[in-house]
Image 1: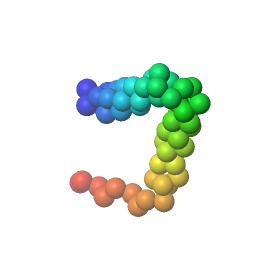
Image 2: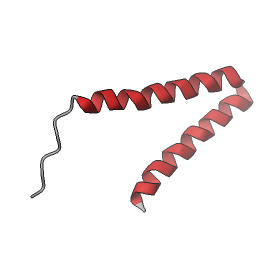
Image 3: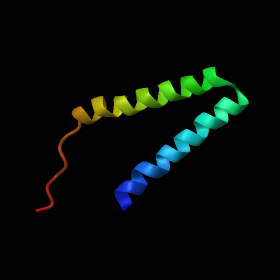
Length: 58
């Protein structure tokens, strides 16, 4: 349940900003928003590759 909310809520927020940009500033700004979100999402993959592993709880 918590995992679903952790994905669903940010997705709805991002989609809401996208449509707000479409309706107010136009499609080019919404596309820039989408590209920025994709870049940030893929950037976390690069960052997490260099992080140390989580300590074990056992």
